[in-house]
Image (cartoon, rainbow, N blue to C red):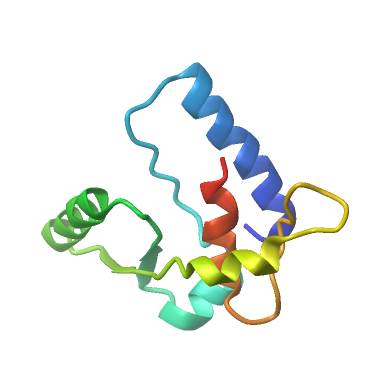
Amino acid sequence: TDAEGRLTLADALVYTDKELKCEKIIELSTLTGACMISLGLDVAGVWTANDELATELADVSKSTGDKSWRMPLVKEYNEQLKSKFADLSNLGGRYGGAITAGLFLQNF
């Protein structure tokens, strides 16, 4: 998803959390083409602040042969999501787009 799709995804995350009351939500998307540029076509990026979940996903990745790589959630990049007009912008700066996409979705 790019910036526009992220808004729909944010709605889906809120619905899943509040209405379905899931213990864990695993969302599968590229977040942005920047992830594919970084990791290529055969490796999935994993964004989570939860170390236990990251380990669980890495174990599953190894057992299935589906490659994944945990990506950083650089808190300082949240500055790029500040907006003069809204509570939050769904688009960060030019660099670190995959990271700012993950940070944006953490708000939901």
